[in-house]
Length: 196
Image (cartoon, rainbow, N blue to C red; front, side, top):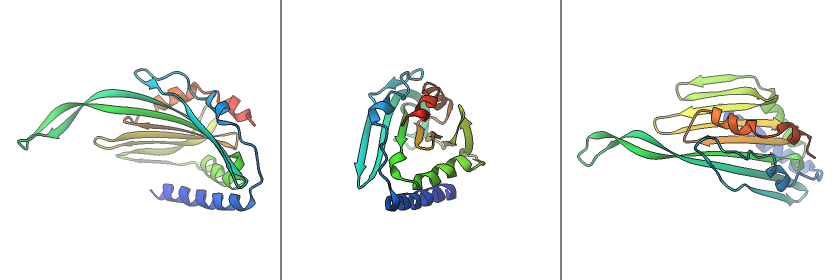
């Protein structure tokens, strides 16, 4: 929790600083970013249509492209019946994986501090509910998280690519980051790194 609060504070300071000193920089249009998104769904998942937007205002610009993958999984859960007793019931659990690429080049120099924080930290935290750690995925530094509670599971992987792109993979309904790894392995991150 402290780590997240610190990250949000640094991000806000960076955005404030960049807003004051922003030099217009052309960002990669979202349609170009969509070409990097994974095309194949993990087993059992369906790929939704990709979305995106490129925004520019007052000398600050950003571009985002994303795609979602959805599935349903049967799972047994304990539920309280009308008579007050608990019984194991099979329920449908929605699974969702979302991959997003954001080009922050148009946000000014302030974003460099955020990217340096993500790529410069070396840490690993683990509790009975999950873990959070710095990682290197296919040569790119980032942060991986996994969280498990009784009926709530999630995972996330954030990577900094080319000092301007943030690639974020989020999973809900499952905590196994291998699903996110499968999707990210389809992406040409080296090609993304060279985009201008």
